[in-house]
Image 1: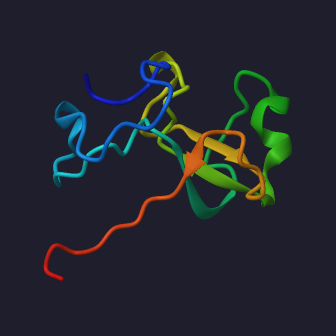
Image 2: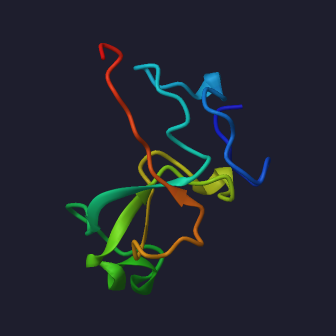
Length: 107
C-alpha cells in the first residue's frame, strides 16, 4: 500500500504510484522500486555499534563502498525502513539499483 516492496511486482512501479506512501512534501516512492545510489561513502553513524555482527557492515566502511538508500522491489518490507542504508561498489548493477532526479516545481 505504501511502497513497491516484497517482490510484489518484480519491477519498478510507474511514477506516481503508491500515494499512501507520499512524504509530507508530496514526494512519492522514496522507498521501494530500486535502491538509490548516493555519493556518500559508507561510514558509520556517530555512536555506531556493530549489529548483528561486526562483519555485516563494519568491514565495508570507507570510500570504496557507496551508500544506497530506499530499498528495492526485491526487499522484504520487514527489512526496509527510511533509516536503513545498503552499500556496494558503484560498478555493480545486480542489486536492483538506480538513481533519482528531481527539479523544482518553479522551473
